[in-house]
Image (cartoon, rainbow, N blue to C red; front, side, top):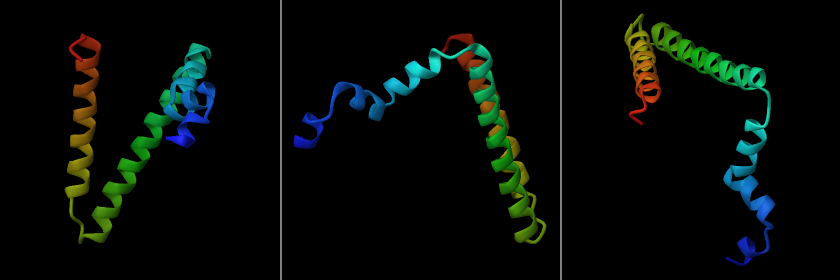
Length: 87
């Protein structure tokens, strides 16, 4: 508690992520879309690496490919729920 009381509000907002989101939202829409697209591309690379690792290490098992496809379907389902205003 003593350490938290000595932190300024600006630094505390940065620790909690509020300052980061304010700076991100102040950027241009092109920058925001490029960051979001980059994160999406990075997540697809992780899924591809996971599925290929399981495929080659686990005696040509297709379980990694199935799990990766299921993750993509769940991401699409969550996007549909978000865009519909349900969540």
